[in-house]
Image (cartoon, rainbow, N blue to C red):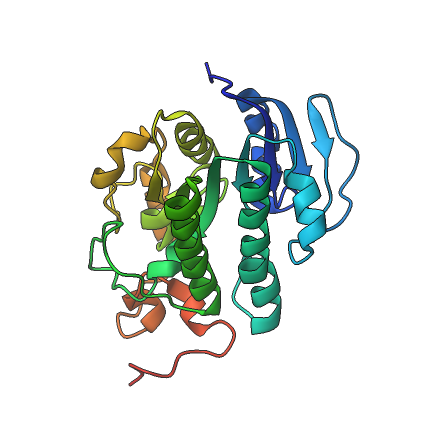
Length: 273
């Protein structure tokens, strides 16, 4: 049973793939789930409110935040690409969100960060939240900015944040890389629930992955969050091996945890043979 500790919960990026997967699940966490995205994606259902807002529009974001007690922030650009959309959605947008939280007295945020904050660590390494960021892309840089901004808003204004470095959130893992980074939708909901209900969250960085046998991430330092994953990529391993080729160990997308993000947008040129 999920404890409802917040009356109104704001979910940004509600029309995206992950937001859509969480929409019904998060209703268990609140009395009213307020859904926000840039464009109209249909009417509110029972237990829902709509608050459309472009994250780069400070006034619209403020209106969406007003009256909620906690925020699950999935909104923004979710892939590598040109800098300006990333700037507006992920940098200006996250600033607008935290300013609105400060103004309206919201004290807890779950911020969807990304494994691409640390994408330039190698796949043979296991890292903790204490490891310095090594972004693999402009997208990764924008998420590192969001983590730093949320830290400042905690230190200055007491807004608690869980920076959830989401690995690969899909219905099932799609390739060999995701055997390490996969996060099931049910485990993501368990993780968000833990972040919303733990008595003292503080400012916590936590890797979002399921209970995969192969993992690059160690969450031992954030046990106070109370996240216990229950799903695993291991049951998909045999099928993934059967349908995918042997990886090329000289390929940077195989060497580094960031995978194909290293070659998205303007591709990396270092380390090439």
